Image (cartoon, rainbow, N blue to C red):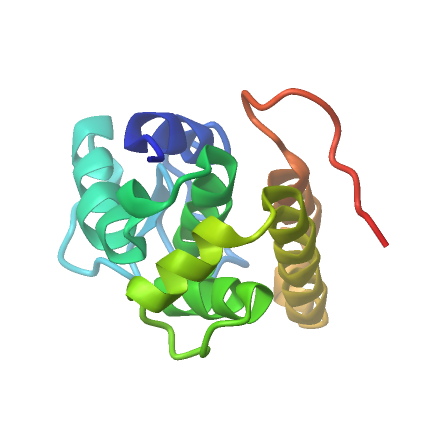
Length: 167
């Protein structure tokens, strides 16, 4: 079973303090929580504890992170959910593991994720994320963020060793 605290630490390592970047359509952002996603939240005064609660309830619980056996897989899905949306992250995971891509993390999807060879899942999931970010960066306003997105995808966090892609 994957651990939320470890996954949260991984995501937070890529998310910064308060920023209001003019090219970010999310608007004000702190710890990766955006004003666009949470319009009633005081983003500037958001605490790390509040961000943790949001991540747990609105992301980790929905991807059913506690039911994913491999920590690194859970972290990749969680990180993509935070960065690109929960349904998208789940759909990409479903496509990689051969489950129906409906965007819902149900028992069939969890079983498929937990049965696939982790290295295979991680390689294909990372490639799918990279493809998504390159497509998104075609829009001028997003090009600014491409390097950070790619760095985020390829970061193995506390997991040892470089990322290898198998062919």
